[in-house]
Length: 199
Ligand SMILES: *[C@@H]1O[C@H](CO)[C@@H](O)[C@H](O)[C@H]1NC(C)=O
Ligand SMILES: *[C@@H]1O[C@H](CO)[C@@H](O)[C@H](O)[C@H]1NC(C)=O
Ligand SMILES: *[C@@H]1O[C@H](CO)[C@@H](O)[C@H](O)[C@H]1NC(C)=O
Image 1 (cartoon, protein in one colour):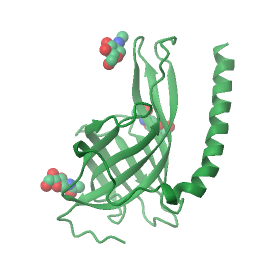
Image 2 (cartoon, helix red, strand yellow):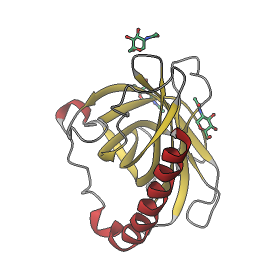
Image 3 (spheres, rainbow, N blue to C red):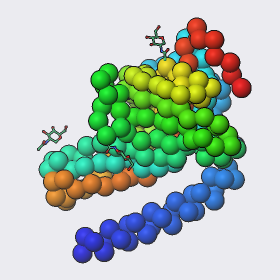
Image 4 (cartoon, rainbow, N blue to C red):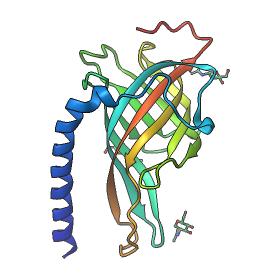
């Protein structure tokens, strides 16, 4: 019974995401946030220089520990304002030495010629919409690769989130995993002292 319900849920999710893709392609440019993005004071980035904003579409992953759903991963595709896929978001299998785990990677592609990545740990977060995951400020623990993309990023903001919340049902076996569809924007900042040139 669980299996059938699961299949149905997956089918519905797939249909929703197909519908969403068609809408996103048309509307993405119009929904891209202002520069700098309007966010609550607790996650603002006053002293840094904004270098990229991307739209993310993917899933937050939760595991049930017997009493609570704990978020342990996220995967998403990243799109620029022209709706070109420019990279991906995921969690490293384990936290790095400085506690970083969420990672953003640029794709060697037309939009982004070289590989780069940045790994962060959260600094502060704020719930803006109770039906969606929080808005978050994260700081870099590790970055590498092309300095024109993520290579010199110092801070990341997640904001304008939609969805991604943990399941509400406690009717699950310990160890069960569920994914929850979400979208958000991510903005990437370098230190203002950097000699980074924005293109
Ligand atoms: C499950 O996670 C919650 C929230 O972190 C914690 O309070 C609880 O002790 C955990 N339960 C088990 C069985 O680990
Ligand atoms: C998150 O999912 C990605 C894609 O499946 C995987 O490469 C990564 O190792 C996962 N991270 C964790 C912490 O499960
Ligand atoms: C940005 O500046 C802060 C404070 O000066 C420093 O701790 C951090 O390592 C810098 N980050 C990068 C990616 O250069």
